[in-house]
Image 1 (cartoon, rainbow, N blue to C red):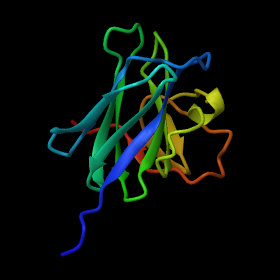
Image 2: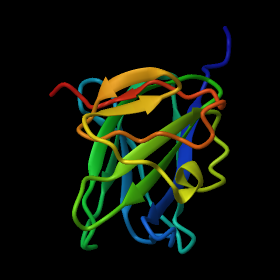
Image 3: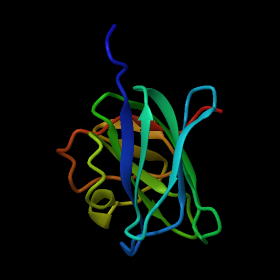
Length: 150
């Protein structure tokens, strides 16, 4: 019998001024809404949720008691994992960008997403989110990320 594949989602949470955000919760839920893994960002704003099977997951940034707004996105997570970086503010929902592979390094799109209006574009795939985040690194392969249909 083969070994069960496990994966992870890792990344950073920063403000729009590129300051790391400690103490926010990141939660991975399966398609039924069951919490599979959760963690709190460290002093560098970094996190990793681990030890779950590759599948489609809701990834939620819960701002807890911070002044920032949270957000939930949905993405397929393969065996190579996923890096989901977040940019938070006090006036708009968190902006998530994703890349295949769970490096958990770097900052959300170089800390310079361009907010334009009704969609978030990740690697050429447009998904309705309420905002657009275009990366200066548009040549990087992006994972599919979308708002959940609850």
